[in-house]
Image (cartoon, rainbow, N blue to C red; front, side, top):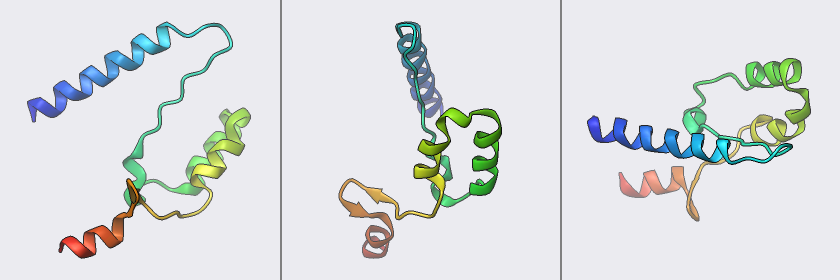
Length: 85
């Protein structure tokens, strides 16, 4: 558990350091893959972005508009899980 927390804190510090180094006009985008198991509503994400962040709506639609297969490297994750179990 502590190892996981430590790794997360290191990643957060790295992200903050990167954001601090951005030049005016540059943007930092951090993607969270927690929705790999569809724990969030696609409609809710799209509605939020359309209302509050319309300038990135087209990008978010590419990412979340429809269900997509989940890959690990070159392998389709569902196929990989079936082969392992």
